[in-house]
Image (cartoon, rainbow over all chains, first blue to last red; front, side, top):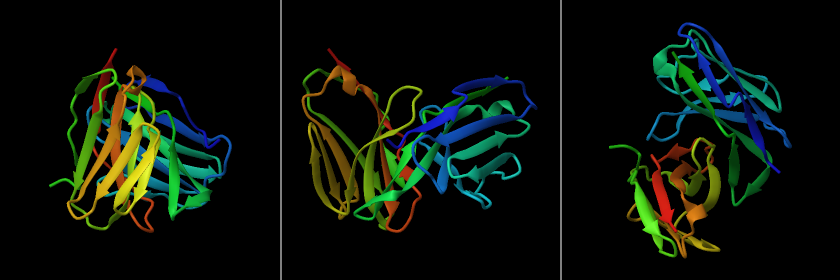
Length: 120
Length: 111
């Protein structure tokens, strides 16, 4: 159980276009999802926290107008990279919290397989 | 100084060797310490987590946390080629969902 999927797994787009990435929790409901970005040989950097039915909370330095996040249901969050540029090329990973599985105060995040974005 | 420091490697060991991976951190508020395994072009998978200081063992894997030194370790015994992956340490404070990751150490176990 606790499977998170992402679609697409790999996308190539032209500079200036927008790209939407979907993150789904397949077998559980996730009130909170997270979006990370990972550049080559770098750590995962949290971009934003997405809560179902409310506005996302963005980390410092992340442009909310460029990275649009929508968490319209308990199983789906989307990240739209608007007017993408080559410097946005990265590996985007989402994760989801399972509200019902808390052990020793630890609530595990389950990660999706990631989406590799290449902007030409 | 970054919050979490992890030697990116790469680390190459022969099959059957004991592998030692480690991270240091600066934020004393961190209470939960995790190790994730990430295969190429895949999302991270949780291996183990430890709350506060101490050791935790799960099969061939042992996690150690020394909060006084702000140092955590992951040991892999009898390493297998299937253990070849990037290992990420991550940490978070109590009551927080936000994870802070290290850069990851790329491990290759040679048959």
